[in-house]
Image (cartoon, rainbow, N blue to C red):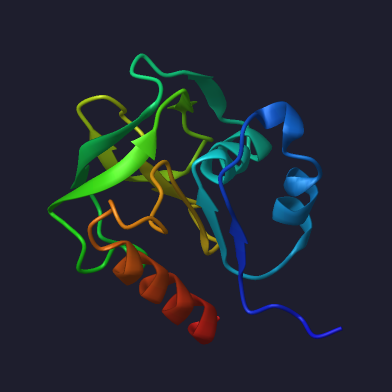
Length: 146
């Protein structure tokens, strides 16, 4: 089988139903983008903490880009996204870099300190998210350059 250029871990219902996602995160050597539950799974895999968000459910959220990095290039300084905060990353893994936050969630986006592994709490794939396509295009560029 052909090796993938990148790996996207999409959202899902609960951490308990995330299956063997952590094994992929630990073993594959390609760029990874975690979306919502995928973002949380990345954090948990590397020693971060997940907790219940105070603002549960899906909502339109304005995020502030702290560090454009490769994945958020051209998206900030602020943008509107569609996100669920039923669960969220409450403590980033050691060494991870915070990329974005909002007034309801401190860790809206993060990245691994040395590997092309990124997580976003919001859903870039839905129409309600401004600049979601740009985020994917940025991720595809990371994949092409890896």
